[in-house]
Structures are given as C-alpha cells and as structure tokens.
Length: 233
Image (cartoon, rainbow, N blue to C red; front, side, top):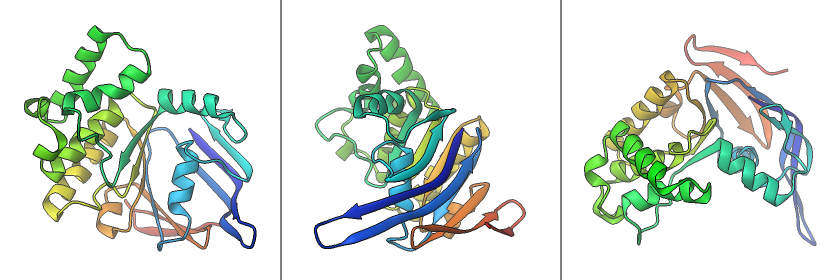
C-alpha cells in the first residue's frame, strides 16, 4: 500500500539547512497496524505529514497504492488525500461551532456526497463508534474520549484506505486513552490499515510493528507480536 524509498526532507532558511528526513526506506502493507516512535525532533511527524500529503519530500520516492506521490501538484494531492486518507490528531481538530454530526459530515461535503447518503454514512459511523447519542452536542460538551471518538468517526466516514494517527491519546487520561487504543485495535481487526505516531510504549504495543527513528533515519523495527528486534540494514 505504501512504499517509500530513499526519501529525504530538507528545511532551508537563508542561514540554516536542516535535514529532517535522511534516506528513509519504509513499506506498509494493506491491513497492517504500524507505529512510529522516537524522540521529539526525530522526524516522525514530518514523515507522517508527507505520507498524509500535507507536506512534500525534497527527494526520493513515495508511492501510495502504486502511484508516485512525490512531485504531485497540490490539487492532485488534495484529491488523493480526500479519497484515501483519514486523519486522527492529538488535539482532535474538531470545529467547536459545529455539532458532532456536522463535524463528522464535513469530509462527505468536501467529496460532494449527496445529502441523503451523507445522513446514512454519518449515522452509521456514529452508531459503530457508540456516539449516536452525542450527534446533536457540540465538541466542548463531550469528554476527551468522546471528542476523539468523534474525530475518529470523521476520519472513517469516507472509508479511507489508510488511517494516520498522530499521538491519538496524547491529550487523554489513561482510561479514555485506553478506549481509543481499543477502538483502533477493533478497526484494525476489521481490516483497517493504520499508521500511528506515538511516544507511548503502551500504545505502541497495540500495533503489529514498531519502527524506531532517530535523527531523521529509521534505526530499527520491532515485531510486537513476537517481541523480536529486527535491524534495518
């Protein structure tokens, strides 16, 4: 599903050149649940943003579903992003002025889905995530866990090919955080492909595979089911 080869990202100012990613090689297969870990500044969020087509690499190859993404124009990236990628953020990124229903509905509006079909999809995903009773509420009327469920519902309502989760439990207490991780595990069990960035060893343990980064490079991988370290050569 995702194939990355020799991918680099350089941030330049007039005085400084910073290499955020250095010759990254990575492959994620359909149906995998993969975690990226590393210290702040190691490049994991930059990599996630490139995979999510929110940023572009300086060089190298990034293929999504067999198509090269590096070098696409913004309009093309936006189209691919809307059709294939669902985002779950640490800060939920819900719009406070909109109800939960309206927040979840937004991606469908952007994809020009008819009003009748939108209603069906929103109600179905809300029921699946156990927030049907909260659709008329506003984000600030929800607990943190409920807000993240609403954010996950918004990410899933378009049936994306891949879910990108950036510190999805970072603003939650342990109880609500655990509920979100169990939710992601359930989604994976039902066939979802998930790539998650986290600082939490506990959250990473829910995934099949953990990739460790340092200084913009992939250092190693760990298969969580067998707990065997696999060096990346």
